[in-house]
Length: 217
Image (cartoon, rainbow, N blue to C red; front, side):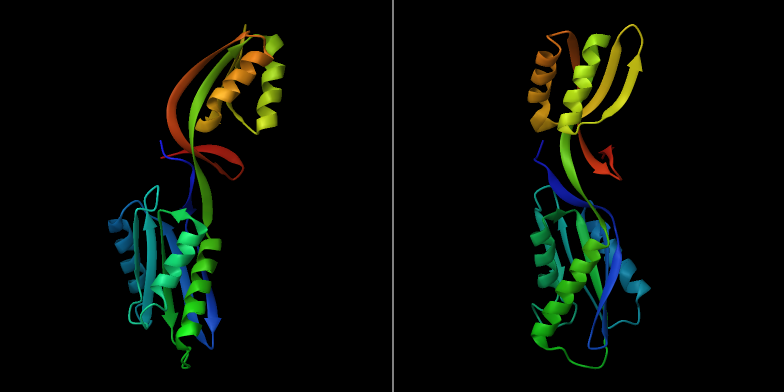
C-alpha cells in the first residue's frame, strides 16, 4: 500500500478580484480524467457567458496524471500556475477550474499569473483537504486489569477506539496507521504483560474527518 498522501474530500468555491476581473475558483474530488472533464464541462455550462475557464488537475496516489489548460489566456499565465499550486500543496485527485469574467482592464502576464494562482489557492482553502492514511483494523481482547493500560497507550498515541464490547472480557476495535502497527502491538503486549490477544483485519485507507477516524474508499 502506498504511503500517506493528501487529497480533496469535499470541494469548495471562492473568488478573487483583480482590476475588476472576477476569478471564480471551484474544486472537486475526482478519480479519473473522465470525471475531471465532466466537472470542467459542468462549470463551463454554469458560467456560459464567461470569457475563460482555465483548469488544472492531479490524479493518482503519486500524482501520476497532471493536466492543465490556459483556455485562451496567454500561454503559461493560467493553467500551469494553477497546476503549480496543486503540486506545491501536494494534493491528489483534485480538479480546480477558474472562471474569469473580464473586468475591462488588461492585467499583463504577471498579473494573470498572480490572479490565477491566488484563485486556485483560494479554491483549495475553501475545500476540505484530508490526509489519506494507510491503516489496518486491530481487534484487541483483554481482561479488565489490562484495559486501563491499553486505553492509556492509545490515548498517548492519539488512536481512537472504533468499537468496544464489555462482557467477561473487554474487546476493543481500533484503527491504526500501517506504519505504527508493529510498535502499537508491541507496546500493548508489553503494557499488559502479555494478557492480551490481537487479531489483525484488512488493510484500508482512513482519514480524520470532522475529528473522527473514518474509513474511506
